Amino acid sequence: MLKKKKLQKRIRQAKKDENIFELCQKLSRVLSRYQEEQVKKYLGTVERYFLQMFNSLMRKGQFLNSFKIDPQTFELTMLNHSNRPIFKHSLSAGETQLFFLSLLWALLKASKRQIPFVLDTLFGRLDRTHKENLIQKYLPIAANQVIILSTNTEVDEYYYNQMKPYIQQEFSLHYDRSSNCVHIDNHYFFQKVGI
Figure 1 (tube, rainbow, N blue to C red):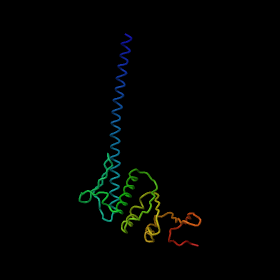
Figure 2 (spheres, rainbow, N blue to C red; figure 1 turned 180 degrees about the horizontal axis):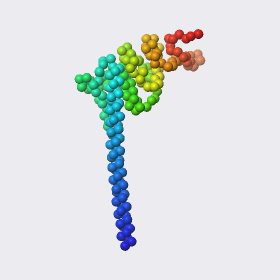
Figure 3 (cartoon, one colour; figure 1 turned 90 degrees about the vertical axis):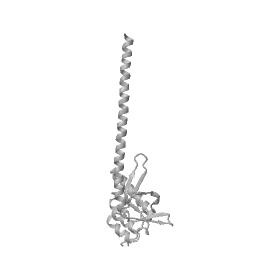
């Protein structure tokens, strides 16, 4: 009789363990589906933001009709206004720069996080129209804090004056060979310093 009760107890425990295991498997499947849906939702938001920004920066107007990110492989697919594929390697150096700036902005905007943007040689590969689009449409909304590292030829007086309304602080770094030090001035390259 005692053996029978022990055996019945083991059977009940095994069924409980089996139910717990099944429950855990179901929960795991539900969580996986939820995660997949969240990734798709996030990527859909990134796709919309990217398309909006990239097309606004391109001087060619509505350059892209569609931009998709595969949620499994994260492969990018771009279609032009004729629904023909556009490949990243077919973009010019300036267009590639705008592509990555737009993608970075879209990822951060979709994440709803605020981090400073540090942009080095921002205008180096861009023509006049793309530079102006970047200054007028991208920089004012890129982030709460945007740090632009440039040379005096990259941001000349014309572009500097366009950016001036958005500039809170500016510095020039000057390397002194004799002292092997960098001096920091609180003005841009060509500005006259008050005495």
